[in-house]
Length: 358
Image (tube, rainbow, N blue to C red; front, side, top):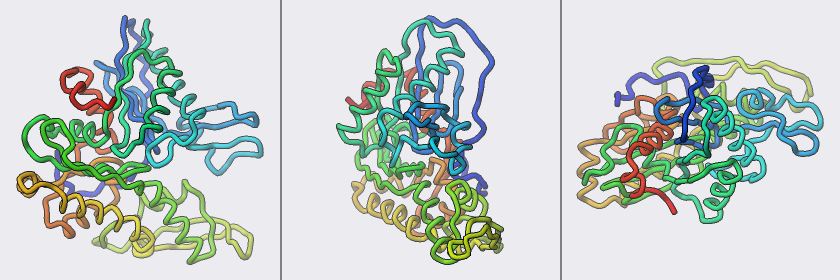
């Protein structure tokens, strides 16, 4: 892990998809899948992350899936009548079963075709810690329809902790805060189990919506989801920046009805994000209050680890450090921690059996 001293400019956005060209015959397939609200990542055992695409599907007039991933995300807010670009995942779980099934099927099939697997794969899928039985059943059914031979589900915070290199199987308290696209999962982990967990369905997507609402209310300007995400990446922050920054944005003026350009500052966007950030901070404080004393002592020594794309919001680590008085560290690869942790479990089935969700 590395200290979160230098803030990355990337916040909860999909890096360029890894499209491997290597093709080798394999008799069996073992995959790890992070089916996230914002992005879906697929890891092949022995190969690493081979697919990283937005969790977006483009639907035709009859509901048929025309495209998935990055190609579909480019259509958000730009589709003609009869074509919709939708996100089948909401708040970390399946909201549209039919589209999610097609999305998962296409991503898994794409991986199988590239690596020429001869049999149906064994797959580990990460899910939020707050997932319900109905939502678990939806994940199982989608995976089964996608051609999965054997499915294991693991909790996202444990997978993220393993991916961040924390010793989750030791009798030591480890605190992980995984800020994704749809949910923020907070967990205290010891002996390969969750001692306390709290999930709030407030994360990166809610930050985008807060920015859209603020710009609309303050400037009567309507902007799209992609513009809001870009604002969050470039000038969004959870704590005052060292230097004031501004950004020009374009949208449609609601009163005049014409395109218009305005300039906004980081202070305004910080104000727009304040409520969402406060929910995350309060959830972390509640988790600390309910952690057993012995594990609290470990957290004082070891600190809190941040993962997930949303955790890369500028100065979120400083805000949490000020609110809790505890050391903060960022995982080396926050966007991929969950799928990397699930991938490690492909080589350690004893650990997988301990932490898998029925």
